[in-house]
Image (cartoon, rainbow over all chains, first blue to last red; front, top):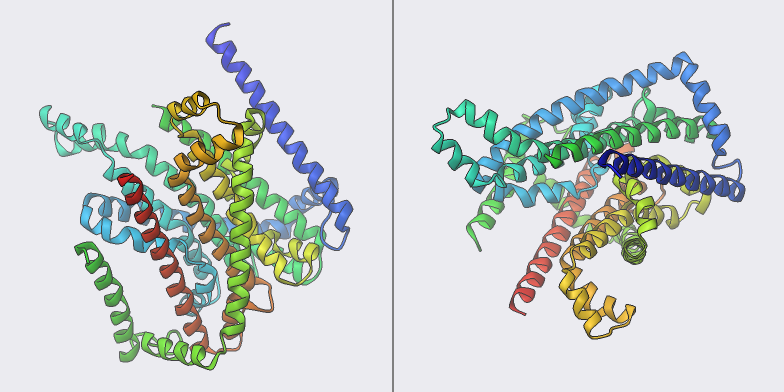
Length: 254
Length: 250
């Protein structure tokens, strides 16, 4: 068998496995529905139909817009600041060693408990959501970037010196390729956590966004809408993470 | 105390000192944040009066239950998934995108399933922590040196004996990483769950204080949770280092 045929076979098997997994999840979902009933959840087929209807309604797009804007701004600020802080802490080894356990402790903190503080500082509205998204996403970005810089092979730097590369050339040809895969992993984790942060932020003290739709569904016992929004969020989160993971693996292979 | 630990302490103390100064001087509005010394004082009073005993007991039991369930189920599933390649191929994509799913949106569902009691909270902590434990177990098992497995075969060990005497000890550092994550996630899951939708526990107490504009209690409780998280982390970090030193000596 040629190499491409083997690759194709693994790809087909991969799709088959994913399909099996999806079928299992749908069966468990349907089973759960049979056991619990309409009070708590809607069955898969109805939920997909509701999600479709939701996607065609204009009010849903307004909420989606609100979440998207907050998420993108949080992600941009969190990624830039996180990478910058990570680079600084990575190059200055001592500060890095001082900061690492503190950052890890902050990472394990249930950040929801600090949300009232965020609300008091930023007020109700989009800036509180953005700040909360950043709080969730920035720490893994810093930690991964820092470890990427620390793990640069000294041989790379020696080679650069031996070849008399300018600082710019060293950065472009030696440092960047060495750290980018690991930083990308940090950004991938940060992506998911930022989304989580923004949606949790919308669940309190917000009148717009997908998180608000979920919590509103809970409070008004509108189970179909709640389930449909949850489905859309989960499908988006998994699709984005699968795509980023594939890119991540590709980067790490080189 | 090492130089790093001293600087860390200085950074933390400095942070609170600056906060204290800013709030005392009025640079930060007292309605936004109260001085850390007042937080600590109020926290001390709450602890002394026993006002926190009930929510604390509630939260700790929930976290402990979620943690134990995560570790037990995570370890067992990790072993099973590692032993069956077919299952592994199914589980890999699930584990890869597991933490991308914002699980808190399922919390109302859990309330509908379990009722409004401690079990939805335990369940969310469990759901949060288990995948980390499974991933850590798989990582550990994948890295058991092949020569160890050969040793087990040479000694004609049964499957269970091999797990108990070869696989587990070899995988311990990775398992410890799993314990740490499972505990952190159980903590986050339970407290956040209490905060969002629950009538008891530390998380609920914070939300309640916020809703009733009781800033003193709210900040006292936040300080408590922060100190708790830092203490837990430090304890696990020390435990891990001791374990590593022991292994290196052995």
